[in-house]
Image 1 (cartoon, rainbow, N blue to C red):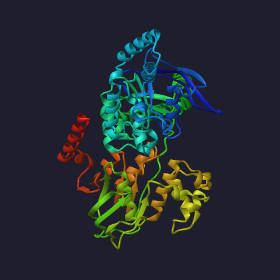
Image 2: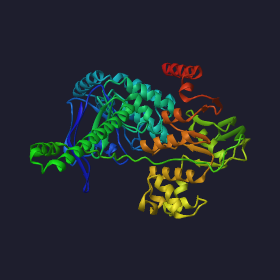
Image 3: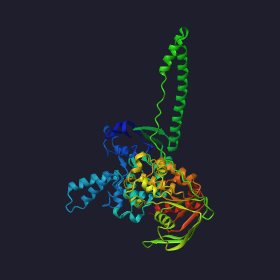
Image 4: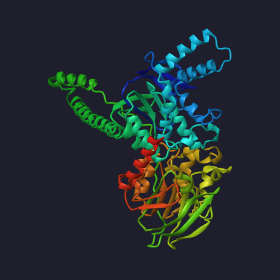
Length: 543
């Protein structure tokens, strides 16, 4: 068990947390949720001991081991992958190194023998002999190939490092597991594996995530941060949402009844207070009036942007024809004879672990890259708006937010442009911020504003939910569901894909295309995917 006792954290004069008392018990997976800036990651740092609270303390059941997901992707670059994972159990790794150093000595003494015997006993008790195989099993489950297990961390890609650091956090069956955005940069297969791992994990888990499906799948309780307080709710994310909305509704209805009662008592007092025969009743009602207290209903600190894509022109029957697109990068064919035709009602989710191929396809379709062979043709009634995965170049400018968005608007009126910014939660002085200094989430909201103001009837979005909070993801999800045009997108948020897409295209590791007109859940449940998962499991067992 881990608990926060009267925890207060002040940043300057502002209290991020105030007298927080909460216990996280064994056998539960807690989803820690709240608006951007509410302090979710900060609270995890307090629980893990990386950050000291201004007041209060954190207590852990004696003898229990805590593990957390590292955020520094370069911290272990000097180490092999397998060692990085085993480091997740610091004591085990320490014993392993001391033991190896003793056996490597040329002048091995009797004292060394006694010490080695003690270490061997502790090593065996901690299942040290299974450490490498356990680490490899975690790495395989997250999609890190066996040939990479003994490579240096420095040689891995960013997404591979994320998976290794996650395996490090999971290693050795920790008693308390803290995970801050564990699904970021994971492919859908790795997320599904992590879901099953956490469902079957018997100890305490506290997880921060913007993935609603993930929270629904793994969480047994929700810890909601709002206005510096943390409120526990039994159940998953959807249950929290329904419960919190119901609670607010009940409080409003109770207040309405109280207000009606207050009005009734006030009218009686006003009418009969001067009447001698009614004076006792008026006095009694005054006392009753004084006892009525309205419930304080604080508005949530959560803010939802208003995302509404409105095409300037209705799309025709001819949308997009792709014939034989092929592309090789660094000697590897990532797109191999890609062919498909889009209809006017298609909302296509591109899936699969070959993210580079999906990004390349989008860039080719937006004429940012050239295919080695093959053709594509957009319909004459179409207009496209594009959300790139890497938006660095978009914001390499000293323009303000308002100036930046104005350059993409046919209407140059400042009020018109600021209207779009206001919908995306850029209010007042935010409009004069330089785009160069924006946070990741702010840049995403700027790009979505650009897409809205374009009036395009075809939207291409490459990982648009990265850096967005739960509220913005929900707003974007709803905006795409009601969008009357065509959508091509890729996203790691299961619920986002399931509720938006009516067609699934997978680009396989070989660069070929699997095209299905179906929902995402139906696609995952198909015999083809079941066979693939069976082969994947057999491969793990062979390793």
